[in-house]
Image (cartoon, rainbow, N blue to C red; front, side, top):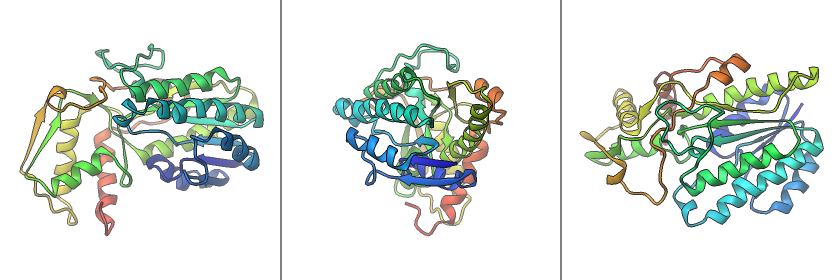
Length: 301
């Protein structure tokens, strides 16, 4: 089996390159090899590689920047997916694509299911929803995995930012009225291995059905409590010299950003667990594993 990873240098992409190796020949491309804003290059690249599985981990992820660059976000997160999905269908390849909790407005009082109607409140969410619809319109085999609050030991993410600032400042002010499930990129990649393996088996036996699933850690937490948990773990490790004394909860209104964020980003994962037999870990069970990895590296940031 030949697997193509698009966006191999991102948080999830980096993990995918390592996790997918047991399934077959893995070919990975980053932004330099395949720029999704250049639609004409997508078809040429995909046809040249002719993969059996395409895993798209590339995206325009600058949520606040998307407010003023919505056309670019739509190009990469939306129009590019039209081309990728069409090429995947033409090649007879399975398409795995990652979406986001930001397609919802966050007003629901309980976790969102895959059947809830999307209603994004920012440009990034609209662009990701555009990509979902582009895939669903094409008559190909696909799995859309919606995730949330992704973090990793590498890249730009909330966890790394908080741990860096905790070594530089005496006080941190963190939003406490947005809740979600912080999700480790490695868990996403490892889960993708199971999704690909089982989906390919189902395709061979003729039982596969394209679908969308929520893929996040279990449980819920605010950004504030996530930050506190991360700093508490870091304090116990030798390579972190934590300076911060106070972590203060604030409201979203006290920390204005160009893009509005959903107050509730929790996603129900029952559908994924039941279909693929996956066991979903609690966010606070896997967080120490990621921080341990960061602690073992010579250069933390």
